[in-house]
Image (cartoon, rainbow, N blue to C red):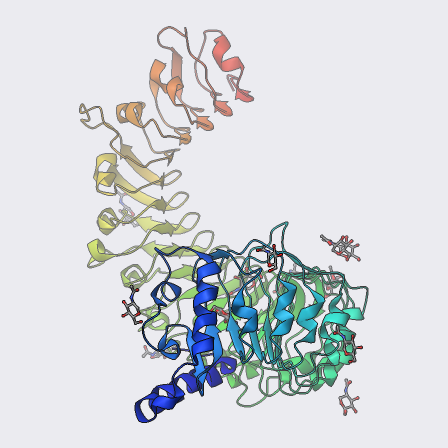
Length: 626
Ligand SMILES: *[C@@H]1O[C@H](CO)[C@@H](O)[C@H](O)[C@H]1NC(C)=O
Ligand SMILES: *[C@@H]1O[C@H](CO)[C@@H](O)[C@H](O)[C@H]1NC(C)=O
Ligand SMILES: *[C@@H]1O[C@H](CO)[C@@H](O)[C@H](O)[C@H]1NC(C)=O
Ligand SMILES: *[C@@H]1O[C@H](CO)[C@@H](O)[C@H](O)[C@H]1NC(C)=O
Ligand SMILES: *[C@@H]1O[C@H](CO)[C@@H](O)[C@H](O)[C@H]1NC(C)=O
Ligand SMILES: *[C@@H]1O[C@H](CO)[C@@H](O)[C@H](O)[C@H]1NC(C)=O
Ligand SMILES: *[C@@H]1O[C@H](CO)[C@@H](O)[C@H](O)[C@H]1NC(C)=O
Ligand SMILES: *[C@@H]1O[C@H](CO)[C@@H](O)[C@H](O)[C@H]1NC(C)=O
Ligand SMILES: *[C@@H]1O[C@H](CO)[C@@H](O)[C@H](O)[C@H]1NC(C)=O
Ligand SMILES: *[C@@H]1O[C@H](CO)[C@@H](O)[C@H](O)[C@H]1NC(C)=O
Ligand SMILES: *[C@@H]1O[C@H](CO)[C@@H](O)[C@H](O)[C@H]1NC(C)=O
Ligand SMILES: *[C@@H]1O[C@H](CO)[C@@H](O)[C@H](O)[C@H]1NC(C)=O
């Protein structure tokens, strides 16, 4: 269990009291305190069916033993009523008479009212936690009179119209006398401050260690006065519209362990020195499209665990010193302007869990990752990587959940071991130069694979029968390769979760005629079926019961005869392509038909009849004979 540091004194005092109760009956709860607690309970509105603490408070027993109550010498000094389903009854509460109270936690309740100004009476409070308690509106000035506070948490994770506000008093006034503050959480509070005002207010809190103010509607600039706060360790300011640079002086925050500035509309160049702050563990400057920068040489034995610069204008290469970050578990450089080859030293990052280099201009080979035993997510999508993916690269990477190598220039064989990784769900190798024959693989029926995309490569030979046992498979895209042989569609029926099947543009002969006179859909989940250029001679009859179909491609086959009437009866169809066949006409009557398809392509057939009016409503219609 993780205890927050600020809560420690609270828990220690519980233990202390427990011990002393056994030795010395004198530290039992004071009668007055017990009465105040019972009175408070009496006035509180809370859900007695769900309460885990309040509901058990009663006349009998020692109030210092009650759940959620902490005492010192018989006085109540701590109250933890978080998650008690409290919805009101705090206005005239005897809570405010518990004058010895030091720690108060009302987090995670649904008290939809203003924060009562009477909180200001609890002058001994050191820890006040009203996070996600449901309080709304302007924060009263009386909170600013709790001058002993070292932790103040007024954060909300649900941004609503009724969120807490700091307008009058503003943040400057609220914090003016709270000079003992070490941990300040105001996430989600609507803070009205002009320019550097909020920075000035914060930078007078000399003991501050935690500053958490994401989604506060702060505006920039971020002022260098913050760098005065030498104890500052955690800074979370994500989702504020700063429209400003990150001041160079922040490199002087030598205690910094976490810096989160996601989606802050940051500009200019990110100070390189910040990467080199000795204790830094988490750095997230993602989603700042106008923020440039490059990765520095990382110091020996750096502590960085999470580095996210995704969706910024960062550029340059990934330095070889990346391997100095021995604890690195998340490296997200996606959607930037990085280029160059990856350093061989990347192979030494043994703690890597999440590696995302997608949407950059990296090139060259992928270094072996077989020492990153914890790797779960790997995306290299849309780069210029080349070379082979040998099975030794993947040896022992048993934790992989997602592999995306799509849109690169990888070549050579696809190692069959990829299909047998025990937790793998997504395997995307599309748009590369992979070739050779895919081997059959073992234990397919235990596979967790859901998503396979091998399309647009040069894979040859038969489609491995092992695929037909991947029972969790939802997406199988094998189009635009050189697979050959004959394949019977009914063999895919074992894949009952299949949403999308793509076999188009191979050298396959697909046999879609099979006995399905049960009238139920053969593929209960199928939404998209791509069978372009599959040597079909007729429209597969089983399609008739696939009422969920959204997309159907039967183009470039040898389908002859009439278009069956039922084909116009798919309610959800968006895109149907029957072009480049030998279709000669349309079967049946068109009464009561309304074809909602967004696009119907019938061109290059031998249709002679005029276009039935019900199809004319379709937005895109290509009915030409060429
Ligand atoms: C009163 O409190 C005691 C001790 O906390 C508990 O065991 C008992 O069940 C409670 N009685 C009622 C009626 O809630
Ligand atoms: C609170 O108590 C005061 C005086 O005791 C009373 O006038 C007021 O109506 C009470 N308010 C509520 C909401 O109970
Ligand atoms: C406030 O209480 C909630 C619920 O117990 C907890 O998750 C949160 O970490 C607390 N905040 C602080 C600053 O201790
Ligand atoms: C802070 O303290 C000063 C001096 O005691 C006082 O004048 C001021 O009103 C206090 N501010 C707040 C917000 O309580
Ligand atoms: C958020 O801040 C901007 C100025 O930065 C202000 O115009 C806007 O009114 C604020 N939004 C709210 C809801 O107060
Ligand atoms: C962010 O602030 C800038 C400058 O104050 C303003 O032009 C821009 O519209 C704001 N963007 C958003 C999303 O509020
Ligand atoms: C960092 O602090 C030192 C000493 O206080 C000062 O000389 C230096 O100018 C500061 N650096 C920046 C970039 O503000
Ligand atoms: C990095 O940041 C982006 C944008 O904020 C986010 O979508 C992504 O999940 C983050 N990456 C990781 C690995 O957490
Ligand atoms: C991104 O950086 C390049 C130089 O690397 C620069 O030319 C371009 O203007 C920058 N784009 C933005 C949006 O800042
Ligand atoms: C990507 O890198 C290649 C060289 O590897 C270069 O020719 C190309 O211009 C780069 N593309 C972009 C968009 O920077
Ligand atoms: C890891 O990969 C390297 C490079 O491909 C290879 O030389 C080494 O034998 C592999 N190690 C294991 C345990 O497979
Ligand atoms: C299928 O492709 C493989 C590999 O290219 C080849 O050896 C085989 O002869 C082909 N089979 C057919 C029936 O074309």
